[in-house]
Amino acid sequence: MSGRTLRVVPVDGSPQAVADLVAALDAATSGTGPAVLPVPATDAPAAPVPTVPADVAVVVATSGSTGEPKYVALTADALRASARATEERLGGPGRWLLTLPAEHVAGIQVLLRAVLAGAEPVVQDVREGFRPAGFARATGRFPHGARRYTSLVPTQLARILDDDGAARHALGGYSAVLVGGAALDAGLRARAESAGIAVVTTYGMSETCGGCVYDGVPLDGVTVAIEPTGADPDTGRVLLGGPTLAAGYLAAGPAESAAFDGGVFRTGDLGRWRDGRLSVLGRVDDMVNTGGEKVAPAAVERALLAVPGVRGACAVGLPDTEWGQIVAAMVVADEEPGPDDDALRAAVRAAEGRAAVPRLLARVRAIPERGIGKPDRATVARALRGVRTT
Image 1 (cartoon, rainbow, N blue to C red):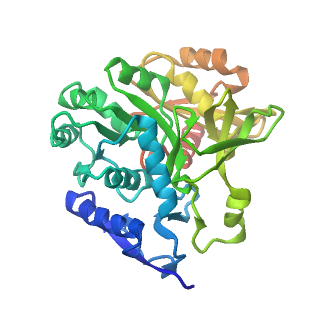
Image 2 (image 1 turned 90 degrees about the horizontal axis):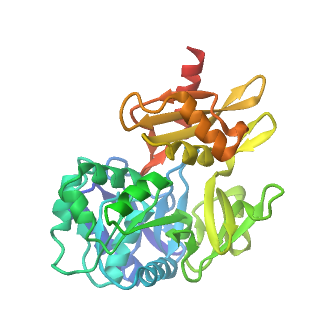
Image 3 (image 1 turned 120 degrees about the vertical axis):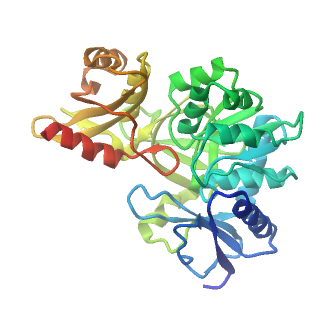
């Protein structure tokens, strides 16, 4: 393959490693250096291919929910379009704080937005994990009066709110706090807004240069379409297009390449498009077919999270000889024992109907996660199958 050299850049969460990555990203997007593949320092594979097409600036390894990562090729034009559209939606340029892993597309975009705004990003050292105290200290490095932005996953937002100290106060000084990577439940958003935090939910993926739909509304130039999966024409698979779209996958087979057919990306997400606003209902493959009725796990989770005293929830389908599948859920309570099972089931029944009611409920201290804050549904399902058989 002729084209541009691809350089693997290991990052370990330290400010120095991030500074090296920023320099590499700046050179890659300006055309003065090789394309960049950021990877965790503990897992630094060789580049999937030695060269990439000449217009590709950054390659991102997806989280690989199926166990096999894909390598997404992003052009400099797409990355700049995403950064500019974000800047316009948020009301102008500002200083950015990085709290996320720099090898993920959301972290890369924080760095590129900072470069576009002409200011070095502030970096929280997360080598030992995310800590609210570290967030507060990092925020203190911003110049006084600077317009500031950051990007968090829901787990980080919850930890800051639970801190109830310097970190919560610091977060209230941001002009916008982007929250993505996983669904943000209504209760957590309400807690944040009541604390004076300017939350903006984002939806997107590596294949769209990160978040491209903010609070349900596409960024300028981004298109949203629905490929119906049932009788409702407004509900189905989400298709995304526009200037932030990736160039495709590196070394992709026919099935992977087909995801980009027609100038759009066929996501694996189920969504509803009404009145110019997108609601994401969960993964198409996660739908539970119980007794002939289809249930969206995300809808079950929203109903559970709306119950006072519930902090976290993850719903999955388990095989069942009578029903085909049953709905099962893990629940994290604010305090033990938390709401009883009857109250939880009643809330789901009222919101989503009888078919959506979990037949199995398990109390846990934390929902297993993968990537940056996404529930690990495969692990949850294995654990719940174990509970059911004991």
